[in-house]
Length: 375
Image (cartoon, rainbow, N blue to C red; front, side, top):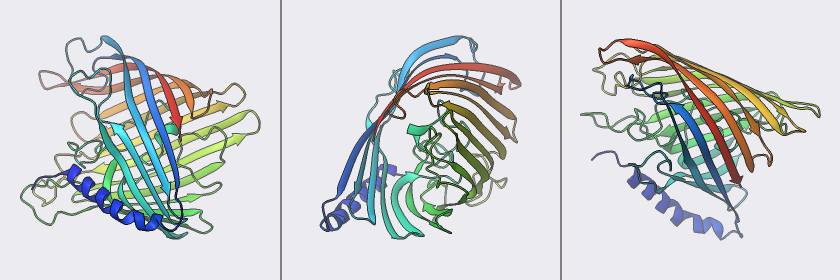
């Protein structure tokens, strides 16, 4: 049988629905419902996100897009039992006339806390060995997540066959040393469509971090609400694929003036070189090194936050190096609940021409984004 993500998720949801009423009988659960919406106006050169050079690639196109529209649900059944669910539109509404948007289950996660050092989570959830892949979309500092921190797990056609960085599985997490040292260890579905194989391996991820100050809330910026200095690292493994890296996050209040935020990460990815291996990613994920950096300053009184970012992907193939750099200005007039972000991002990369050669080009992108969030 082929890979069927929807069937597995449906079975998981039905199983949890049968189990949760027994938990709920203990006392009245606490229920919270929220929403998140991201919409933007854009101007972008035509081949900004392409790998091939096309006619008129330097021309600018303009439009509008609603690309996040989420409903979020959380239920605290007991002090130890918690469920989080989140829906999402299946296609951006705007520049995609050939795609009909619908609603899907983006997250469905059940947590049971046995001890402070052990919580077991089961369901469909974010999967990553690095911090950027685990932080929340509602608290981003830059206009969006990084381009290359987890580039191969965005949909079922991608090498790791995930859904917007989510996968179905079981994850263990907790903290020791006064909760300063935290860990995550998960087993997930991963890629299921290896040809002519049985007993396909699961995807295993592990991450550890140490919090020198406040416990990291996994935000893109806390707007001066936290004092965070965290460093960590992890590994991601399935078949011949391996991903590993290290990261550091600083969110430092600076008196009444505001706060500074810095986010730095390095990753190494490799799908292996053995094309004949039983569970090979050799043709799917090239060997590469990835660097990522964001830096911003929040002016508390005027609620403005300028920021800059830089990313670099060095792949050991014909396309070589891609650099992304730029910056923006955020206006948090209602904090995370409502804000406006203006950004300019440039992407410098090698593109394939019709003759099979490569040429280096730089493309620009301008976003004016609005966020509405209540949770």
